[in-house]
Length: 202
Image (cartoon, rainbow, N blue to C red; front, side, top):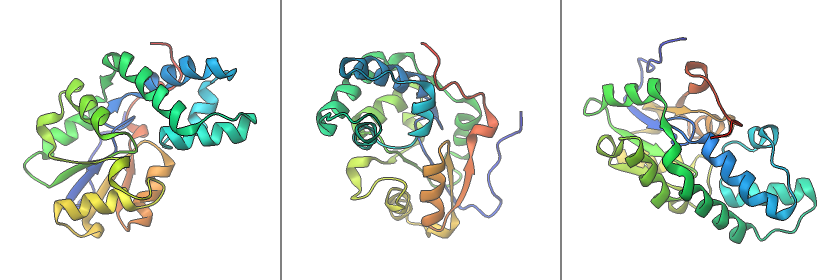
């Protein structure tokens, strides 16, 4: 396995949360699977992988398009988040990325930019023992346009007081990498540094 390092030009670091700092993907998968079976959808790891990085409401909209269903995106998105919260204690930190964040804590400005809801994002941080390493967290509620738009990461840079061009973003999804590139930032896909376990039972 490669060692995760920062770009030598980086002066500030931005981390995605789900699938980057915290191995929440199996938990998200099970939450979707448990909720969507009520709507006659067999949610598979392949579908989940295809929708990686899209917030819950956007995911339900996409699933309506894929399956011809008529789910209320806001309502089902919230059902899914409630189910996720019930089982989120099962998540684990992603060690190589967490180690990198600890290494640069107090050395470089750092922020978390997530497509998740703020309250659950902070809860994830606590479960993974990360709360004390980050003061700045930008969630889907803090921006008009979530990823793949650059707004989340641009807001992180603004709150850290740095130029977007000196930020390096760590992401597990192509949509996140796209958002980082649109923001004019350096980016690194972290899935090269750990074993991905999207569709496993937990």
